Image 1: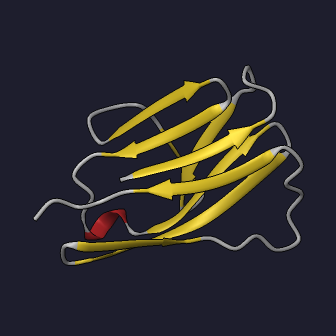
Image 2: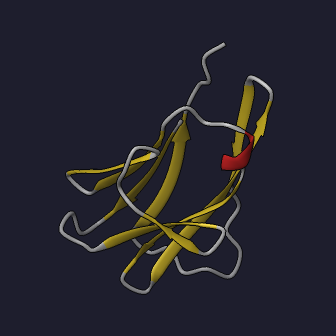
Amino acid sequence: MELACKFSNPKARVSWYKNKLEVFQGLKYKLTNEDGVFRLYINNAAMEDAGKYTCQANNLETSCYLTVEGIRSSVTGQLADTPTRGLDISRTGQLAD
């Protein structure tokens, strides 16, 4: 599963959160930055990975919800009352059988 957040400043300090807890690089998560596109990869996504994911850069943030159902997963995101100037989130992903 891949979540992506594009920020206008490619050198910004970006943090990822799952249910308000910061996510760090490790066996479960991989964090990358390619020219201002900050990605969070979730390895072997499972039911316990469902929740609200937030990409935060400076004082800006955007969030989405990851739902995992069996071998299906979906991501929905809607920002309300959140300044998003220069910040955007997208997702791609597929779970293996």
